[in-house]
Image 1 (cartoon, rainbow, N blue to C red):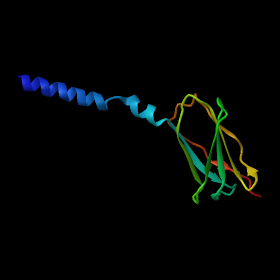
Image 2 (cartoon, one colour):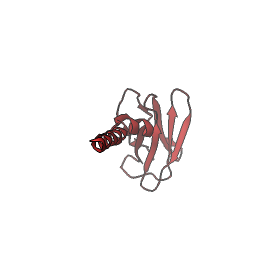
Image 3 (cartoon, rainbow, N blue to C red):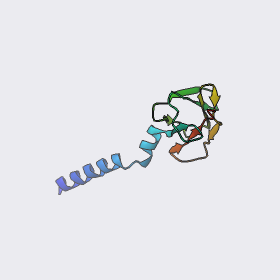
Image 4 (cartoon, helix red, strand yellow):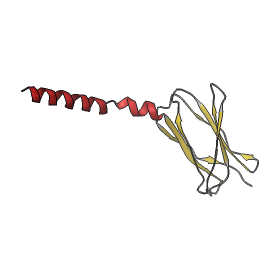
Length: 115
């Protein structure tokens, strides 16, 4: 009987350690990703994406790879961000990621007029 109780308590402790649904979300934060392309849908490698924290005005940048993709992981879900891309002196429209948007992953494609 004593062994059964100890085993039950151990099983309960192990299950509680893996049962916290908020632990992973809090650790990983929000992911903002997407592609930078021209108006014909072609990827724009070497474009620069600017992400601005609207509270602190801190700016993060990402140089786009050959596939046109970018990603900003581990962002705070409680802050608004502004994002835009720049390529050869031309700029995309500025988009906003709102703190009231509760998605953990936000995808924003940015189009730059290259002509």
